[in-house]
Amino acid sequence: MKESPPIPRDVWVLGFVSLLMDASSELVHSLLPLFMVSSLGASAALVGLIEGTAEATALITKVFSGALSDYLGKRKALTVIGYGLGALSKPVFALAPSIGWVFGARFVDRVGKGIRGAPRDALIADLTPPEIRGAAFGLRQSLDTVGAFLGPILAVALMLAFAGDFKTVFGFAVIPAVLCVLLLTVGVREPAPAAPAQARVPIHWRTLSRLSGAYWRVVAVGGVFTLARFSEAFLVLRARHFGVPDAWAPAVFILMNVVYAATAYPAGKLADRGHQRTLLAAGMLALVAADAALAHAAGRPLLALGVALWGLHMGLTQGLLATMVAAAAPPELRGTAFGFFNLVSGVSMLAASGLAGLLWDRAGAPATFNAGAGLAAAAFLLLVLVPDARPK
Image (cartoon, rainbow, N blue to C red; front, side):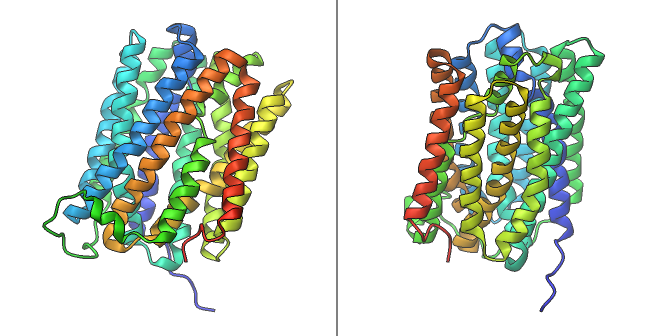
C-alpha cells in the first residue's frame, strides 16, 4: 500500500493561526450570551437575533471573498485582512456600554471571519494533495477547536481571578488575536494559482453553471442541516437554567470543544477512506440525540451529555462538509464554491437562530431543542433519500 504524503507545513501553520484566533474569539463568545442577558438586559430572542445575524454575516460574506480569491488568483491577502478585522474587533467588547456596541463588534468580527473563511479553505485545498485532503481539513478543524476550548478555559480562570468582571476578561482576548495575525503574515507561503487569473467580473451568475450536480447536492444537504444548528449561545443559556454560575458557564464550551477537537481529525481520516456519507449521517443523528438530551434534561448530567453529543456532531460533520465541497468543485473555482455553499448555510443559520430565540421566549427552552431535533432528523432523511449527496 502506498504511504500517504505528510500534511504540508503551511497547513499546520494555518491550523495554529486558527487556534489562536479561536482562543481569542471563544474567550469572548463563551461569556457573551450571559453578558448580554445579565449585564445588558437582553432577551433570548435578541440574543438569538444578534448571534444568528453575526454567524449568517460570516457565512454570507464568504461568497464574495471566495469568488474574489478565485478572480485574483490569490488567497493569503484576503485571509490576512479577515483575521485582521477579527483582531480589531476584540477591544470593542471590552469597552461596550450597550447592546449596540456588542452588535457592532460581533458584526465586524464575523465580517472578518467571512472574508477569511473561503480563501483559507481554498488555500488549504490548493496546498494539499487530494488523497490527504480530508485529513488536512480535519487537522485544521481540530487545531481550530483546540483554540475553541482553550478560550473558555481562559475565560473561567480570568472570571475567577477578576471577580466576574466581564469587560476586564474581554480585554485579554486581544493578545492571541494579535499573535494570530503575526503568525499568518510571516508563516504561510502561498502556492502558485491553479490557473491564471481571468479578466472577468469576480462574481457572475454564469459561473454557477460550471459547478456540478454533485456540488449542488452537497449544498442542499448542508443547507437543511444548518437549519438544525442554531447558535451555541443557547447551550450556555441552557446551562444557566441549571444554576451554573456565570464564571463557570464557559465550561459548556470547554466540554463541547474537547469532544469536537478529539473527533474532527479522525473523522477527516475516515472521510479520505470513502466513508463520507456514513460519517455525515452519523453526525446528523448525533445532533438529534444532543437536542433530545438538552430538551429533556432534568439536571446537569443529561445537560453534559447533550453538550458532548453536540461537540460530536460538529467533529463528524464540519471538516467533512468542507472536504466534500473541495472534492466537488474545479480547482479554479474552489473559492467560489466555498462561498456559495456558505451563502446557503448563512441564510439557514440566520433563520435557525432567530427561530430558536423566539421559541425560547414564547414556549421555553425544551421547545427550542425539540425543534432542532426535528430539523436534524429532516436533514438525515434528505441524505438518505438523495443517495448521491456526496461528490463522485
